[in-house]
Length: 152
Image 1 (cartoon, helix red, strand yellow):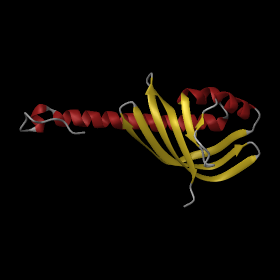
Image 2 (cartoon, helix red, strand yellow; image 1 turned 180 degrees about the horizontal axis):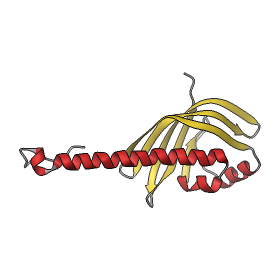
Image 3 (cartoon, helix red, strand yellow; image 1 turned 90 degrees about the vertical axis):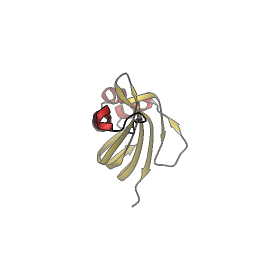
Image 4 (cartoon, helix red, strand yellow; image 1 turned 120 degrees about the vertical axis):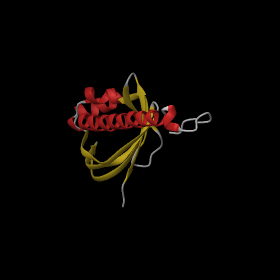
């Protein structure tokens, strides 16, 4: 991050390097928190623990799913019912998960590898996921999720 230095002949004399380093450290900490949130939410989903999963989901979350369908709103009741009936399941893990933080917004990217069960369909493979996160009440929540099959 650049700092204004119009009245400074030396950034170190003004402490800009220390401020920059502190902001970089904070950004790394927040990126690590986003990655941890993604891992915890995914583990809860795989365990079928809807109550542990839902706090990581913004109430107005939207999704572009891997089937190429139109934008869809998140339906907590459908998820809860599907998991209770065994019609929604996952055994996936993250690969190459990364996050970039921009204030109270973050973007994570990575690959989910494993098996998804939705209804009568069981899919095994690798999916690319891009997630937009919002920080609300000191907690990172998924605001938008874009999933696509990884064909490469």
